Image (tube, rainbow, N blue to C red; front, side, top):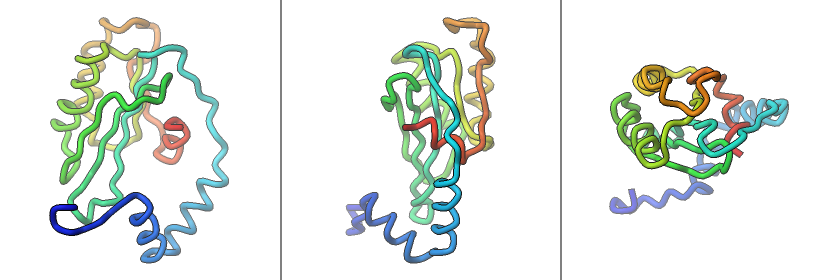
Amino acid sequence: MASKGIRASEGRVGRVLRETNQPYHADRYRRLKNLNPVPYSAEYMGHKLHIDQNEKLVMYGVTHVLAVDGFSSNIVSHSTMPVKNNLTIYQEVYQSAVLRYGMWDQIRIDHGKEFYLTLFMQEKLADYRNNTGRQPYMQTKSTQASCFLI
């Protein structure tokens, strides 16, 4: 976007979204403010991996997908793509994180279809996890996912 002369920092995008769609912004702000945080903890690095996407710039052909370690809150992998793509998310986010840091005991995602390949592979590789007593993945509502990425 910068190469096309478009300056889009996080603050500028937030201001534009507030100005262009005020009812949506007010409703989302109200819901997030009233949201009771879900008790959450990860016991060690590799316990929980959170994968989520940000589609605020989708109108410009930009979708970000991040993988965050639940214990350290470090971004362990990420990808930027024009549209959500199962294969790209699997290769550039999940596979990249697993090859660099090892298997996570559990992956946490929202209910979107863009993570099906990642969930399939996590299920297939479930026997290689450190703690096989946990479910290999958990799906949560997208409004609750923001509580995890603190």
